Amino acid sequence: MDNAPNKTLACDIAAWILITLTLLLVFPLRLLSALISGLLVYELVHLATPLLRITKISRKRAKLVVVSLLAALIVTGLAYAGWKAAIFFRSEAASVPALLNKLASILEDARGKLPVWVSENLPESAEDIYQGLAALLRRHASAMQEAGKGIGLGLAHILIGMILGAMVSLHDQAEEELRPLAAALYERVRRLGEAFRTIVFAQVRISAINTLLTFLYLVLVLPTASVQLPLVKTMLILTFFAGLLPVVGNLISNSVIVVVSLSVSFSVAAWSLLFLVLIHKLEYFLNARIIGSHIQAKTWELLLVMLFMESAFGLAGLVAAPIYYAYVKKELRDRGLV
Image (cartoon, rainbow, N blue to C red; front, side, top):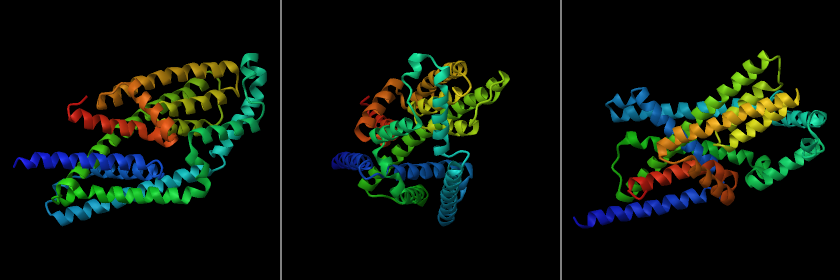
C-alpha cells in the first residue's frame, strides 16, 4: 500500500518527461500543424458530444458508433472548410499576390501625399517591398521557405492530426481501464486539450470582436464620411484569421489597413491608425480579461513567453507559445507550485 503513491508519482514524472519531449520535438519535426489540427478535432468532439446528448446513450457500442460518425463529420467539415478557404484566397480578387501588388502600388503613389520624413523611410519600389517581405519570412518563418515544395506533406500532417484527434476523443467513450503510465499520459493529453481550448477558443472570440469593430469602421464609419477603401472584404478576412495569432496578428492586419488607407489620403490613414491603435489596446484588455482570467496569467506573461518561443523556434514557436504556457501553468498550479 505504501508503494502506491510512489508508483503514481513515478508515472506522473515519466508522463511529464514524455509529454515535454513530444512538445519540444514538434518544432524540429515540423508537426505543429498536426498537433493543432488534432487538438482542434479532439476538443470539437468533446464539445459536441454533450450538446447532442450522446452521453445519454446507454449502450457502449452504439455510443462509440455515434461518436465515430460525429468525429468523421467534424474532420470532413474542417477539410471542406479548408479547401473552400484555399480556393477563396487563390482567387484573383482575394489572393495574397493581388493584395501585395495593391499595397506596393499604394505605397508608390502615396509618396507625394506623405510628409518627407515618412516617405524617406518607405520602400523605393514594389521590388523593395517583395525583398523586405522575403527577408522577414526568412528571419521569422524558416519553415515557410519550403512551403511550395512541402505543401502536400503539410496537408497530410493536418489530415493525420485530425484523424488522430478523432481517435483519441473516442477513448472517453470507450471507458477502458488504463495502466498507470497510460492513464498519466492520457491525463496530460486531456490537460493539453483544455489549455488549447482555453487559448484558441478564447482567441477566436477576441478575433471575432476585433473583426466586428473593424467591419463597423470600414463598412459604416468610413462610407459615412464619403470614404470608400478597396479590398474591404479581403482586409476583413485577413483581420479575422491574423487575429487568431495573439497580439502579432493584430499588428499585421492593422498595417495592411493603414497602408490601404493611404490610397485615399494621409489623413484617412492617420484616422485609421488612431482607430486601430484603440482596437489594439482593446485586444490587450480582452487578452487579460478572457485568456488571462482562465489561466490566471497577465498579458505581459504571455508576451514574454511568446518572445522567448519565437526566438527559439520561429513563427511556429510564436503560435504554440500561448497553448504551451497555459498547459504548463495548469500543471504547476494544480500541484500548488504557482
